[in-house]
Length: 98
Image (cartoon, rainbow, N blue to C red; front, side, top):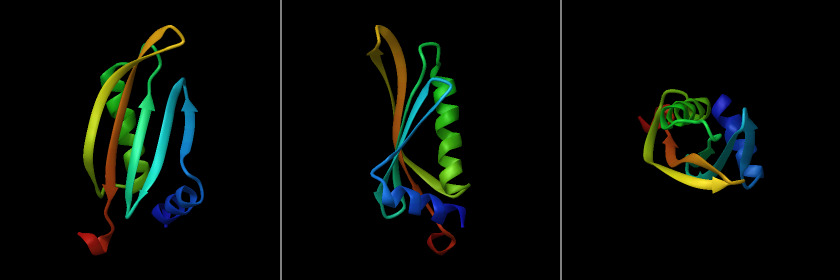
């Protein structure tokens, strides 16, 4: 039921953006149980912090049944500060797909 709520919310909007503790999180529904997730860290964020947050967000959407399709790290300059960013895509699986 939780997954259907996420899918419903994501299907009625082009994307979901949230800022938590200076993290900028953008989750986009790509169709067919696939999602794109981007997390921009704060200036003191490490790759380890971003990877953990990325994994937690994927688990919030899919639970334990998912496949990471790709994950990349990058650095951006925003407001004269260099920040880490993690971007990736993943696919959720339901029981019938297992």
